[in-house]
Length: 82
Image (cartoon, one colour):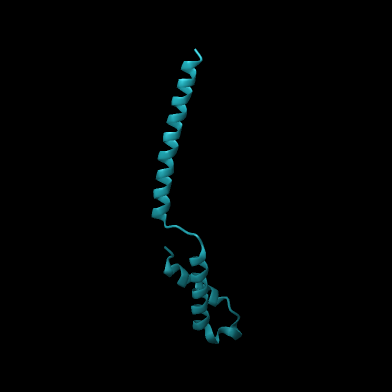
């Protein structure tokens, strides 16, 4: 999930970069920055760390099974060529 505290901090820092003459609507700019950031991040195809870790574990198990099958096939091929 997206950490809203980090988005708030980033929006605050972005609004701090606005030239002094435009800082009258600083809170409004900060809210707009936050909305744009949330919208942009929501469109990205992101997964949670938990989902990533689960898929990583599945991939690891699949790789281990594939390597075991490759060894078995190699052993069978070696046995038939003798």
